[in-house]
Image 1 (cartoon, rainbow, N blue to C red):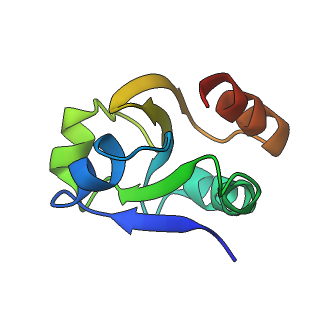
Image 2: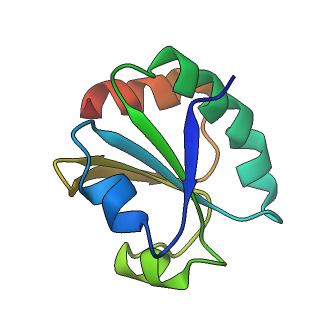
Image 3: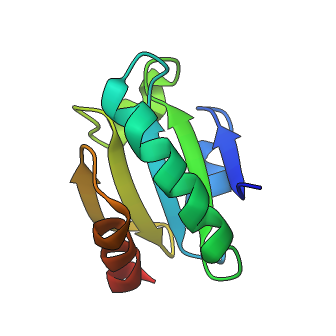
Length: 107
């Protein structure tokens, strides 16, 4: 079962910036084809990394404030945060080996 939290503008700071664990935040939308392709990969990785990393989904269309504050210009945008700061981001679809490498660089 995926270990992913959905958040919104009101809880973004609490769920992403003020947490002890590093955070993998996925900015997405329901209509986005690439988001739909990458979601199963993210869900699988959320189980694999559940003790080392927090996974958070943000609907970029419904949560404009969080998207704007994080300079999300395309979706999906995958952002790693550590100690409340962005460490790296990628945009678009990535297969599992590339997403694992992205995570490992930022944990």
